[in-house]
Length: 117
Image 1 (cartoon, rainbow, N blue to C red):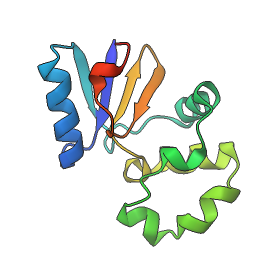
Image 2: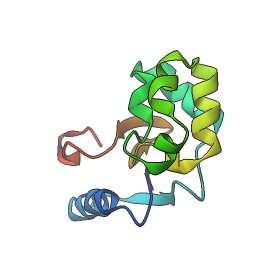
Image 3: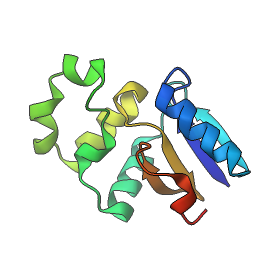
């Protein structure tokens, strides 16, 4: 099952969701703030994607700036980063597109039509 993890008030999330709908894809939407992925989910995604930890953070978000994470994230262990992300959905880069537990994409800069969905 395709899962779309969003912050409903986010305009980028709304655009991404509209694309999924226009492609006729069956997906389940989750509010990323109300249902933040677990620490274990993040740890698993770190390992399977190999992406840098910073890619998982909403670096333009108010919470990220308030916590001064710009200088802290590069020094975080995977364990600490996963714990921090799981503690507050507003820290997570959005939207997340997940298929069968595997993270396919973070954010929405490229079209979904190019993904193997």
